[in-house]
Amino acid sequence: MSVTKDEVRHIAHLARLRVSEDRLDTLASELNGILDWIEQLDEVDVEGVEAMTTAVESSLPMREDKVTAAGDRDAVLKNAPKSEEGFFVVPKAVE
Amino acid sequence: MSEPRYLIPGATGDWEVVLGLEVHAQVLSTAKLFSGASTDFGAQPNSQVALLDAGLPGTLPVINRKCVEQAIRTGLGLKAQINEWSRFDRKNYFYPDLPLGYQISQFAHPIVGEGEIDVEVEEGEWIKVGIERLHLEQDAGKSIHDLDPASTYVDLNRAGVALMEIVSKPHMRSPAAAAAFVRTLREILRSLGTCGGDMEKGQMRADVNVSVCKPGQYEKFRETDDFSHLGTRCELKNLNSMRFIQQAIEYEARRQIEIIEDGGKVDQETRLFDTVKGETRSMRSKEEAHDYRYFPDPDLLPLVLDPAWIKEIQESLPELPNEKRERFEKDYGLSAYDAAVLTSDTDRGRYYEAVVETGADPKLAANWVNNELYGRLNKEDVDIADSPVSAAQIGGVIKLITDGTISSKAAKDVFEILWEKGGDPAEIVEREGLKQVSDTGELEAIVDKIIAENPEQAEQVKEKPKAMGWFVGQVMKASGGKANPQAVNEILRKKLGL
Image 1 (tube, helix red, strand yellow):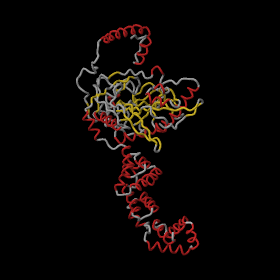
Image 2 (cartoon, rainbow over the protein chains, first blue to last red):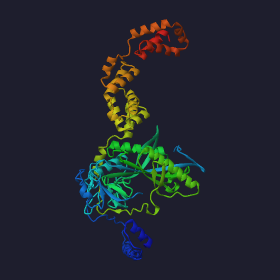
Image 3 (cartoon, chains in turn yellow, cyan):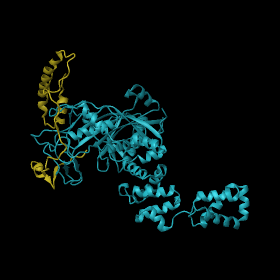
Image 4 (cartoon, rainbow over the protein chains, first blue to last red):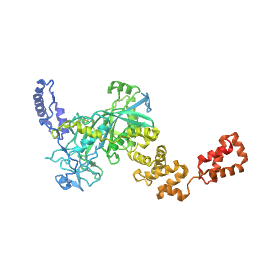
């Protein structure tokens, strides 16, 4: 597996990370190093071994269907850079 | 398999359309899927937001047992496979109304697998629509774009409410079939009590996958399950009414046919339906579409269901619309049409059964509910829940018809009075003098008089027995419309020697 410079640019954009052009080559090579290292796992024979999904031997705990969060609007909006009349206000985002 | 009736003529001959739906149904629950915030609709903006729903650090999701139960219940109602082992994944995308930066959804391992429902497209015309899967996921918040030219306003009340995404197989072949599927699904969910089904409130929204192909291709696809027999599909997002679903499909099918016939290729993409212009347009730029980078949510363990719990839910399932329809046909001797109409809506079926329970004749009861009552409800735009005439009152009217006390015509007058003023049917009949005359002596006297006054007609009727209707009319008129028509017919036949 090999990550190209274009793919790094694309992934950075999807994650909304600003990566300057001169860093792309370095990042691509570092990511490829990580992927090569992980790929060593392919050498292990896992025939007949069930995939492990969690290290915890228990199932999902569940909650009753009750309203337990008071709905503290001020707390929710407190860290918003901008809010107005109870709404979060963000730069225009129309598809 | 019967030929599809929906053919679209093109320059190179006829085309067919193939449709698959993804319906997002809001789960009926008090609290959200992974937080303890309320799901109430219409509250002040951001007043029903737990810190988790706002994506604040240090919070973790804990699943709501009720939402899981509702998904299982729905799966059982769709006669679908319930997966005892399922898992939640993160679907990553960036949008202001999704503060976590990902939607918690189920990708590789949904809670419900394949099922099937029967859908009546037109009267008496049934199709089977396969269900591909049902999975649980979070709803997003709401973005409001028209409050300010430079800003988007975000309300997170809806963020985190549980959704069931129900995916059909591409088994629908006309806009009407797609709408019928949504209608049927809505009735199933409503009878199960798992979703409110109100499309105007966004409780149900549909995405439609549309592709076109030449006749014969669809059959090849069904035989082989190989999608390459079908055309490239486009997904029409977020259609929130039956009318828009049909309009959007019609437009999109024609658009695709034009592209292909002009020698072009349909791009697989997501499109939006502009309800004002009646057109679909491309929604996302191609390179970003469907790059969701799903991976298992490390905050949530796999969802493992106890078979005993599934069994318990199965045993508590109510009667579903199709089962009810079959029972109505069998137990009440109704026509397929009457049974389908009566079971098309949970409340209508319940009202009908209440009428029958008063001892009213089931067939007459079906006519009265479907024609008289619904005719009036629809005309005055009144919901059956607010009907001014109760099931007991209609039952009373029907009993007065069957025991011969009133004619069908007088019964309509009684209904009119019940609608306007209410009251007891028997008392109204008494008070208004609407009783029909079945007394033979009284009727014979009228018949004798009319025959005596019209000797010519009495002679003619012996040649042309059909002309007796004229006499019936005269007797009815003479009795002020109160004569029992059946009794009049008998007496006339006797007296006229027919």
